[in-house]
Image (spheres, rainbow, N blue to C red):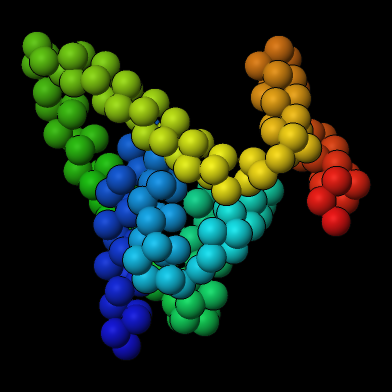
Length: 173
């Protein structure tokens, strides 16, 4: 029971850090799930994140995997609700307040600042996950090639993910 309360508390807290997307909460998620509560190893967290990236739907559905890993199916459900419900309710409330403040002179300034904050949080997530997965020249090369292709084209990332899986079979046995 104590562990379930901790799970719900951690993921409700993480829910409120997702400005700019779920990746923004990744560094804190790593700190709490790996470093503080020791529910997962860094590799297990990255594997669950990777599965979340490949599965249809929101990429942060990977948190259900963390809940399941720690406390079974009930943990998966509790974590999913704890993660999505606070953000959903807050978004609903802020959206309504934001509409009422349409003529407020500071609104545009706040929106621009939040955009910058979301980029910083996303970059923090990228750096955090990079420290775990970029373990050598093979992984760095794969990441660099995928990044270059995505920046140079409008290509769907699915073929790149499939090619990366083949590269993983070749280089990471």
